[in-house]
Image 1 (tube, helix red, strand yellow):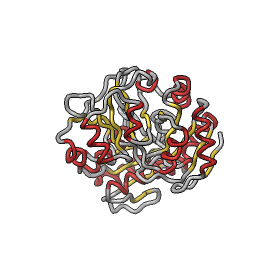
Image 2 (tube, rainbow, N blue to C red; image 1 turned 60 degrees about the vertical axis):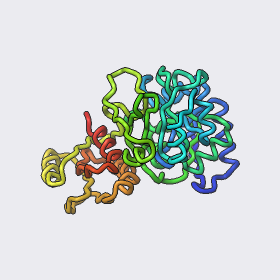
Image 3 (cartoon, helix red, strand yellow; image 1 turned 135 degrees about the vertical axis):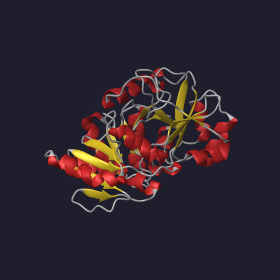
Image 4 (cartoon, one colour; image 1 turned 90 degrees about the vertical axis):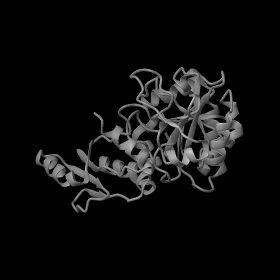
Length: 328
């Protein structure tokens, strides 16, 4: 594994060309998107895709997202491009929205968990865009971390989680959005939200009208999208979600058991060692959440108490990550 620092705005073409050559050779390259860092492989190469699953310890029923350079290149991956897809791509691409559509036969079953659909998006990050252009490939890329663990928002997070199983890590510093993309299934009669993210339900409905919300998938059955595992996005520390009024008492209780305990708060006025005050807006909170949880893990906390975030639609993506991380 080699970690190479790269400018997030004007990436070095020589470094990008090296990474592109590795992808064409069937190797794994971790790279930044605006959401989190992805573990990339040639989406048309079954053996390379298998390396992603092996590196992450990822269940075969959990599909991958395929990244393409622009909406036109999505046609290399999907069998049909609908008017709804076109409207959403025009509104949100490049950006943190993933669309699930019928796949082309050329896409290996490993990418899609054996389903007839494929998840595809156009990332906004300059490094991701440069890599897609230079490789001239669709790139399958889940988050660059061990399966079900905290997603990486820096190259250092990738190195810590995956170590030598990655051939190259392109480190462009912290990501901007901070949580994974919103995923919308367009193969259903009514477009269906499979994973909430920074693009909210009201924003999507303003473009295409009312959408449905997916229910939980059956255990062991192929998911239509990443991010549908019951337990996901978890720190090594045990994460407890509590109401603001219960933060102090929960801290005292856990510390009374001899555990080292940290906390994340928004509304609570608690000031205490190990307590991190998070931004009061959803976008700011999302941008910091994984980085803060990584830091608490690295500091050796046993338990992380997290104050529940507000109920607004803009908070749905953050709430989803925290609720899944708290499940045992």
